[in-house]
Amino acid sequence: MLPKGHRRKSVRAEYRATRGVEAEPETVVPVLDLAEDTELEGGVRMFAASAVAAAMRLDAYLAQAIPDLSRARVQLLIVAGQVRVDGVAAKAKQRLRGGEAIEIVGEPHPAPLRAVPEDIPLEILYEDKYLAVVNKPAGMMVHAGAGATDDTRNKGTLVNALLYHRSKLSDVGGELRPGIVHRLDKQTSGAIVVAKDDGTHRKLGEMFAARRVSKTYIALLHGALKKDNVTVDLPVARDLVRRTRMTTRRADGRNAVTHFSVLERLTTRYGMFTLVEARIETGRTHQIRVHAQSLAAPVVGDTLYGAPHRIALAVHKDAAHPPTDEESIGLERNFLHAAHLEFAHPSSPAGKTVSVDAPLPPELQEFLALLRTRRA
Image (tube, rainbow, N blue to C red):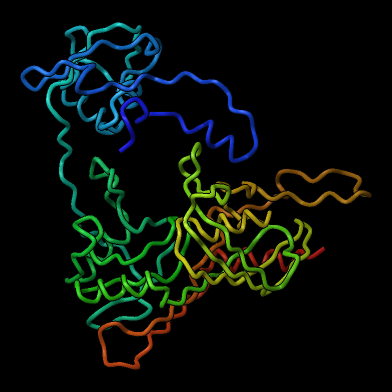
């Protein structure tokens, strides 16, 4: 844990420093020392809002000021009537003036979540009594997040579907992640392996950690790679400002290696594209996507890492009229697909290899066919 007084230190300056940008001064909410700044009586925390809380929402202020409470947990307390401002039950969105007397009664008590079965179709690519390999569609989360606070965020996932179609899954991942050994991004489709018992789960986990599982993806990238075979060996870490993104620009990132091999180059009326096979040695969050961005060739459809929402027709210098919006094309998901998994079976007689191919889904085949018909 960080020292007192630094638990909510802004990381914006560090983020800018990694890019050679001069840091800008910013207002930082003072962190409450729960032993010194608050008075605890009968399970009630009592303290005064600082002056910088003026005009801030109550939930945002508390989440910044109290290091052991996330904003979701703060909102749970408020909804349960456990937060009072100047003696009155508070609302999450109410604006503070600074100086108010705030009371927090007790601790947040989120309702325990466990995954529940849902009748969602599944495409099984391989199955035996130990494990299964499923073809996950784009748009489906693998499992609910650990921070989910209500049942609405615990529906429609791969886990919900697995529980309906399979009577037994491993318990290693806990009640929210039964059977899940590894993950795919929500907008990435393709092959994902699921364990049915704890022993198989642990062995598969060790194999993934030791890089003894071969994982191959198909991706369509904007632009043209300079070489037919490119290896990106750059660390991957959480972006310090845009927390939903990863970055290769932090020296303290975890090592990550991706091998890109060109399958097809397309020069189209919508610009240049490169269809690649991506083989990963490691399995970092957003690894292929952020490594593609580092090559100035983001994955088509991946707006988080620089791809456009819509792809306009390229403007020819002799064109009489600029292209219209109606002539643009788009893809409602990332053109990234886990196409192949291969590994030694962890729980069957020695020598058996599981080798599974997941076909490219129709929406990606159709998009690729469209580009091929509109070559420049």
